[in-house]
Image 1 (cartoon, rainbow, N blue to C red):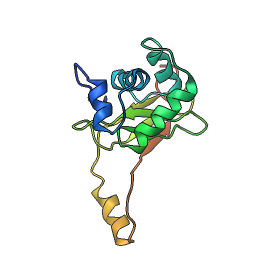
Image 2 (image 1 turned 90 degrees about the vertical axis):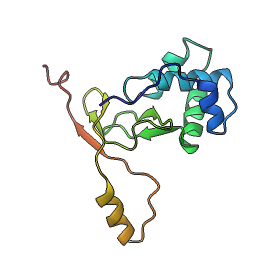
Image 3 (image 1 turned 180 degrees about the vertical axis):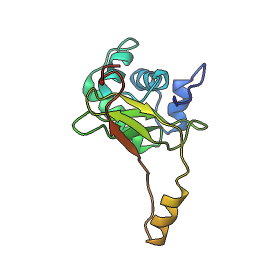
Length: 147
């Protein structure tokens, strides 16, 4: 399942909705996230954003970290030894959902959302306040297996 993307995405409005000033660099990073067809690495986001503005890797990481802390993006850990990935988290998009990550190439795809109420209920019985749920399925993708 691919993340929901909206036509006519308004990066400055999205940034403002998340309490961030809509600078050209921030808008380029958000636009790159909104245009991604699957969770993207910071390097992939940097490459896409550089088509719009001049910026460096450190700036991209700072923007991504701020987006994550303000709820505008999600950070998904990569498969063992692989880079983590990011996806945009606009209102009305696909909610928390599992991801499949390839241990060989580091690729990642979104999976169909699942009901996580049993996880929430179990954590609640333990008195645990959930901040975030992340489910990562690791394996080897079709392409890396030679199909």
